[in-house]
Amino acid sequence: MKSTGMIRKIDELGRIVLPIEIRKNLDIKEKDEIEIFVEDKRIVLQKHDPACVFCGSSIDMKYYKDKPVCRDCINKLTKEI
Image 1 (cartoon, rainbow, N blue to C red):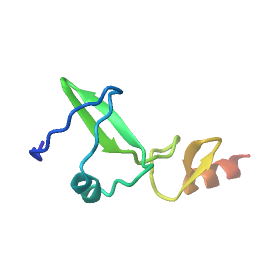
Image 2 (image 1 turned 90 degrees about the vertical axis):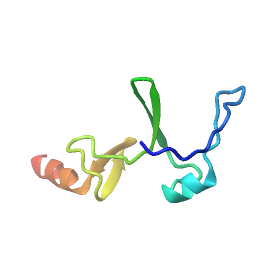
Image 3 (image 1 turned 180 degrees about the vertical axis):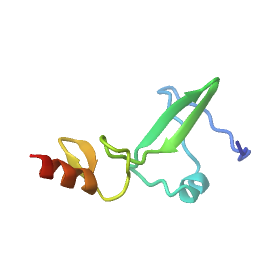
């Protein structure tokens, strides 16, 4: 893991501000979803990349009842019906 040398304090509501340099570098925009992972004693933040609930692909996504489904799985499901 690469250190940025940047330090931020957590406010009274448990929030931190991600520096704009990091957000620009990782293409994180306002309202983007961020996943939170814990590895040993580390907190890891990652931009959320929705994946198909059936195959795990993140290409050509559509949503059905708030769940991501890729075009290939939609085609396979419609053929089975």
